[in-house]
Length: 316
Image (cartoon, rainbow, N blue to C red):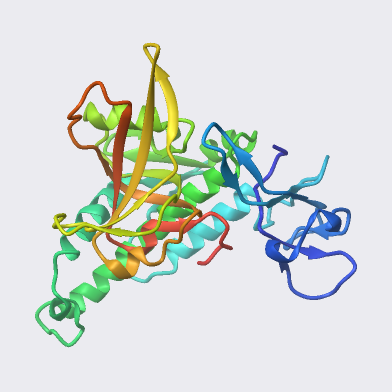
């Protein structure tokens, strides 16, 4: 992939006006596209089937050959990060999850995301009456807490989306230099925070060996329609996602991600055959049959801002 982010809108050189969404573009528009925020030439890449599972990768836009965005461009790595930081700083009386460093980079404060995950789990157990602002004993606190959680999850899913948009690009190193993830007194490697279908097996192993003490970002593509479980108590709405086949000790295993929701309204945000960045707690049940080739793991979702669709424009 060329240097730069994948994009999903662009402007046409021969037309004035707003950026055009990729659904209105095609390969025939190549040589007539430029970045929505700077003058860099843009190319259309058609949808294609990827991997052994042959799942569909949506069409996207990329920088033209030998092109580059300006540093201030919102489609550059730095420009994208600047937007995330500005959004995080925009909520009054809430500590920003990004902490500016002397060298101009940012610390992503994982401890705040860990606290947000726990609070989101607790809030999911409240009744509608508890959540109402009219409830003077708790309602107003719920509203303020909800704003804080949405801010933190929006920032976390935002940097996860940025990482997904520059997959297999030299800009990954730039991102790692501009945003460092810190939890307690140590740094977390980006490879320990962000997972896609190339390393679901690694994520599963870390979860089952209890080596993950913090939320992570998982890139998934939904496979089947929403299901409802009558036996699950906390997260009864579930989506199965496209699996990853990997070999371990000469044996084939199929790693299957599941999204589980505590709120049906949040579950209905998700649609079939779409790619999402999910930030949350990952868990896996005990393997009942060691001879089975299937390895299932789950991502728990309690807040709508834990989810970000890869093809959506920046929504801060």
